[in-house]
Image (cartoon, rainbow, N blue to C red; front, side, top):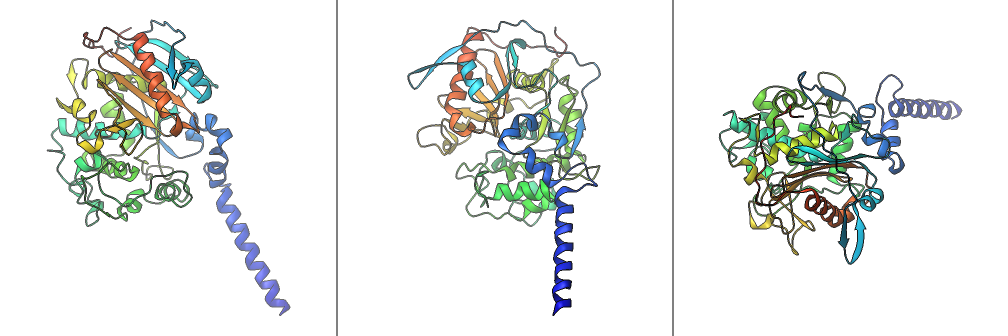
Length: 416
C-alpha cells in the first residue's frame, strides 16, 4: 500500500510539473500564463499596444515609398449632449481609456491625439475592425475576376470546408452575418462558442478552420442578423484560397502597398512560424494613421491614386443594410446600429458607417462631410457606451466637416 501511495504521488507530481511546464512554457516566446496575465483588465491598455508580445504573428510591411498623411491640426474641445447631459469628446476619451483619436477632413489630419502611452508609431490591435479588411479582400478578389459573385459558396474557394454547413454557405450570407449558425458570440459567458474558439486558437494553437468547420446551422441563412466571428474566419479562408497565400502577405500586397500605408503592421496567428494560420476574424495590428487611411479609401469609393481597387458599387452595397432585418431601429438586434456587408451602420444613418471592434475600436466614415475618424481604446465598458461613441463621433464630424453638398476630393497617397 505504501508503494502504491508513493507511486501515485510521483504520478501526480509529474502531472503537476507537466501542467506547469505547459502553462508557463519556458521554452517558448508565448505561453498561456502570459496570455492570462496580459488579458487582465488592468493590463489591457499595454496589451492592446503590444499584442505581438503575447500572441504569435506574421509581419505586414509598408511600401518603401509611403509617406504620412498631411497635417493641418485644428485640435479643439468638441461638445455634445447625451441624455440631457453636457459632455465633451475629452470626457468620452477619458472615461473609455481611449489610446488614440484621429480625424481626417478631405484626407488631411485635422485632429490627432494619443493617450496612455500610445504614439504615432504604436501598432494597436483592431479586434473586429479587421473583419472589414477581410471583407474588402473579398471585394478585391471580385475586382480581380477571381470571384464571380457573392452567391458562390465558401467551399468553392476554401475546400477545407467542403461537406460542412459553412461550406455550402454563400459569401453573401457570410458577409451579411446571416449564415444561420448555432453560435454564441458572448465574450463574457464562460462557455460561449467565441470563448472556446479563442482558447482553441490562441491557447491550444489548434487549426482554426477545422474548429470552425464543426459549427452547425440551426436555421435558414438569410433570415436574420446574427453576428458570428466564425463567419469571418471562413471568409478569410476564402481569401487565402483565392490568392493561394497567407492572409498577412495578401493584405500587404493588396492593401498596404497600394494605399501607401506608412506603418509596419502584423496579424496575429494561432502558432509561431510559417505554418501559423491568421486568426481571420480579428487581430490586425496597425497604427492609428493607417486605420484612418483605410477609412479614407472607403470615403473615396475604393479608388486610390486614380486606380479603382474595389468594384463599382461595392462601397455603397457594403456600407448600407442589404435586408430589412439589418436596419437599425428600436427593434434591432444590436442597439443603436444596423449592419451591411461586414460594416456597421448607425441608427438614422445619412451617409455614415463604421468599422467596430470589441473594447471600443472604431473607424467612422461620414460621406456627406468628407470625414474619417479612427479611434483605438481599451474600454472594458464599450458595449454600454455605443450610443455615446456614435454621438461623440457625429459631434466630431459636424465640427470638422464640410458643407454636405461637397463631394470628397480624391487624395493621392503621397499628398503632404
